[in-house]
Length: 166
Length: 357
Image (cartoon, rainbow over all chains, first blue to last red; front, side, top):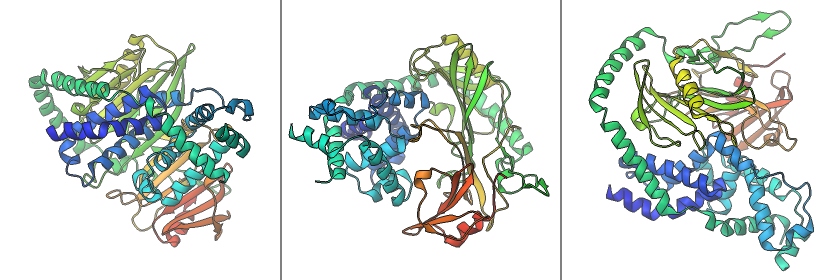
């Protein structure tokens, strides 16, 4: 199983960062990746024969996140209500703006969040996201569109500009 | 720079700024290794006993398989074999869907079902073995205590594949069937049980306290074990979908159905959670080819199509992946019929929808 060890050592940092972006929480990301590592170990002979074992494992992390048990998923959303309307004073710094966005991400349905993370963090093209999620590219675009609409809600160009210029 | 680009850039910045949240890789790897080692230890001790159980189980499987109806029969209702009860004024009734197993014991309290689903189709590697043979997910509220319960049949895994969120597993025997269980009352996972299913695969039972609360460990254990003791195959539990399907064309079958009561994701913009019904149609020996399910109103779009059952439609072609929306079909919700098939096939299925009166 030396191959397994080498593979995990090489891929683990990326998987953990990816899982963190999906779940929004360190503990959940650790649990999610830990589950996947155990499964990968058991199926290593098959996974190692795949053309792209790294993609296979990313898919496992993604599927694990999407089928996450509700008791954990619920924790993602327990981040408090969003403000009804963004207040300029809340966005005095880039840091505040990013923290606000982090909370907004936590409110997204899991599939939308997965699309956003794959698109804007992993920089994956829509075709690859569609393949990974097992849906049409149009569905990916629809999820992204809805997610962005939700994330933009209450933010204005001026507020973002203020934050960027401050 | 337009607003959308700004948001996209902000997203990238946000992700980059939170990379430090990622957990420690060494710790995660160590925990994973420990779980792998624990599992080896747990499974090696009762090996001799287990071998005997497996022989007996296989014998039992043979008898059971020969005497029970095939899985496809158990869940055959949606393919149109459901009782064609009709009345002059109301049209055909929506066929009930049959779960492949029943839960003969439920914890005391108010039961709120969230999910019923089955999948008859397998993977390309094992086309005849369902990925999951059925799932119940529900909440139980009793004297202010809320428990989350999830019961699933994993057709393709064995007890040896058990992976716990709640800590190391311990061997357990329930009604003569080998299992592995694990429990923690105040952490993730709650009580988890993997129990050998005589017909193949394993049953998984998970009982946990509502998020943010705790429950006595013994309550979780007792509840989970008792549910596991009283799972009955084949079951006689039926559930009523929001809409049904009549007899399907071209040898299509229902490979999976999924009834949810609003799901667990964030609510819609209006704050409501819609119940949903979905079917996957195909031959059930390869990936299902056509999805039929209640659509999120935000998904509905496209150009106007031919009416279906008196309802307006919208049609979308995404590079050969066709979607047909039957508008206002179920309690104000649309139904989406979609797949990489000729659009005429989608209309054909649309004409076989059984909608509520």
